[in-house]
Length: 424
Ligand code: EPZ
Image (tube, rainbow, N blue to C red; front, top):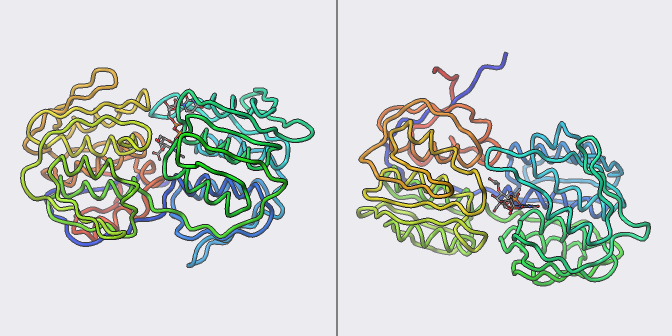
């Protein structure tokens, strides 16, 4: 039986040095799905080698794609991608598999994708994806847990689509489907995340006609066919934000490299308000723990608001900031599972619905804790960096989905962090 591996962190070691930020998971996943829109060979550089990326590659393999991973990057050949079934066994491991629905429907006129389940942070419905595709003429049925979608004989048709919520992956689904639809599509109240702008740029490089991606109104004029492209994945703003917070708990000074500061404006403003010294120079950002930290209020929101994917991490930081801080989670209905684990480390947090009130304590105490979801895992690592003693973090498979070489990167910054068989 495979031994349970945990991450161990000995708190109290000041950080110093540089960390190179990987490509963004939430840009790589839609980019790989978008490759299904055209036949031929793609090249992707700056790909983060994460479990979720390997899961998407496994899915593309089941759909008939071939791929090769080299030192330079990822070669993907979609010439024989004729399959249109995304099986439950893969979709159940990664919700973002649903991103193949739009491209398969637009390219092949049909798709059968297992309905993604909920996950630790909420129900995660896909109604906005389906409503948008139906507005473009798709017929969508639910059959034995599968979404069975069919396009009209003449293909999908452009439409004006208004999103009740600026859903990131729903916006991506419609952008991809509309690229090959007949006529014009307008997406209103579209998501504005940098990953959306990146996907739009990739689709344009493939020959799509898209304008306004990155703003709330995206205009797409369908074309008859697209061609493969060379794609450089943008840096992961969530990974960068996670490292930038670390000096607030462990002390010291670090520089993140190959980041994109313009994707982190709200986060950097919050870290400055907290009392960290933040200095930007090109694609490098310095973060230094200087004077006393101040309690702050964080309210997550769709981009350009404070990212929900950095909510758990900032909460871990606020646990040892003197005074009372407030964290409001407005995007997901159930994204406070890290609170109970932080309290095991001695944090004083009270949750009322979507509001968490954090009373800063002097120092956290190491204890065995459990990762409950991807970003919660990162929050436990941050908390442990400042805790007294050695913290053992279990269920670290969550972490591997979204952080490339995290132990190695933090060790190079001077943290005492390692993987070993769980002891508790
Ligand atoms: C993307 O998820 C990201 N995942 C998430 O990152 C991120 O937290 C989220 O956007 C918000 O930024 C990927 O890009 C692969 P949403 P997504 O649709 O698209 C409601 C991580 O840790 N909603 O923008 O699923 C939903 O209930 C992950 O990397 C509908 O109601 O998020 C939720 O309240 C976690 N109907 C809100 O929108 C829909 O059809 C969040 O939405 C779709 C969403």
